[in-house]
Image (cartoon, rainbow over all chains, first blue to last red; front, top):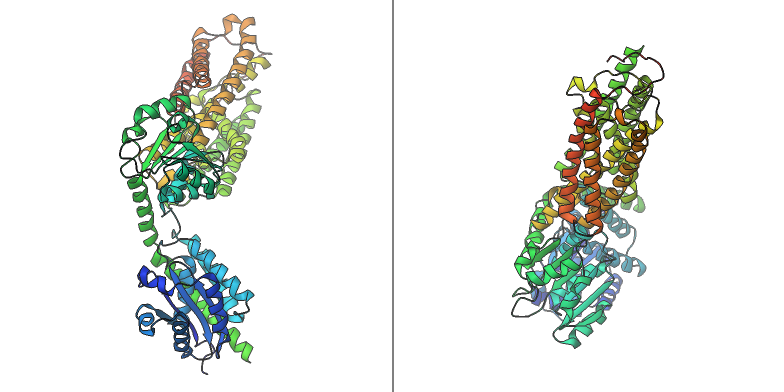
Length: 349
Length: 288
């Protein structure tokens, strides 16, 4: 064996080249992923392994005694999942050695994510690493590799604008709400309609400290159900206009054919709360809020287009930082590669 | 000796202005680089500027044997000093982002701007307050309240910038680093309350002197001061009644501050025409 680390590999599929319908076929439950990890580790010649399983990617990281083991891993996975090897081959990618290492670093930084720079993947990778370590599927090389990759991700994020600006509608709303109210724990939210986008936005606000969420929908049962899941209360749809003054953030997400909140209604509401701003988020199509409401003092109205524009601008800004982040990661990857090789050599000696 | 001291206090004022300028440029450069500035560095720079500024005021106070508020130059310096002092009280407690940057900018404008017209630092006899502590307290409190109104106008300006960004859907640049509109509005309300109390107290102390010395206080000065106080009191009452809030409140406080600063000129020029207050013996005029 000429080089101790010549058999580090990553084999996987991701949103980049694999359509959702195919990804669904490759998808594993968390229990299945753990089971696969154990079984792979038990395979002959696999020294260390880790399975990363998210909605957008399935990746198998391995350290084997020789690089040809990648084919055995691929075969094993296809047999286990009852997949045609040709199908997997068509969509899967594989990297070895330094390239595999660079890939781990890019994944943990979020460079390889659908939403460039998103931080959720780092948490998922950390979780996968913890699970693999607890299952004793990782050893000296992977322990160092993944811990260092988390540090490299942090460095790339702090030295570039890769995570700056929010790229999902929910997080853009949270950012705007913070610019209006500061801390959100005392803000009261009213969700009109029980649509999915509205629900996700309310959840994003809840995750950032909002405690009081009320739901009002034409179908009271739906409102009640959603309010229950958000830990809030349901309001009768016929009454919500009279209660508007009590809410700081109002999310319109109904399927109503016409305008629900007119300029007159909001002007009347703001007279009841002149000192407190009101943030209106219109996620409905057709719109729930009259655009003229924007003219009312202390009211901030954002519709779906506004939010998408902000999210897209932020995403473009993040993409512009990819190359800068990649160069930083390359340096980290090279240093780490040298470190790992040195350690492995020492270990062997 | 006096000349040496005079040089030294002006040098201290100039050094303080330079440090405020440095703090402002530091904030500006980091913001132009689209990064939030280090609060610790901004705070340290303002502390350094404030320390030297205090030294300068002390030296000047030692010369005139009173609070240095005898000419427009000194008033501007005292105002800048009060502004930075208030930042140290408000900044760490309420952690208003960018307040340090705006404070450094206004302090620079006041401290450095006062050097532009040499005649503003015209000599005057020492002991201008005639050893009357009431009038000295009145003057220092009045200028301190102007410091409060200065920081109030900064907070109001920040509010207007943030509100403009939110209304116009601007997401990048300065907007993302500014505090929330609600925080700024609440802070403006508190500052207005504080400023009105301090200015009212100043006027009460001034009135004690005025009752005893009608002839020594020119009507021009009295009118200008009372109008400023009345203006702020009106805004305060309207705010309490929730009739003047948020944007209009912010605009009103900025306009009032500009008027208050402008009113210092008639107040100051009136001093030249007023009879000299009773002093404890003849003292030479300090030349600068």
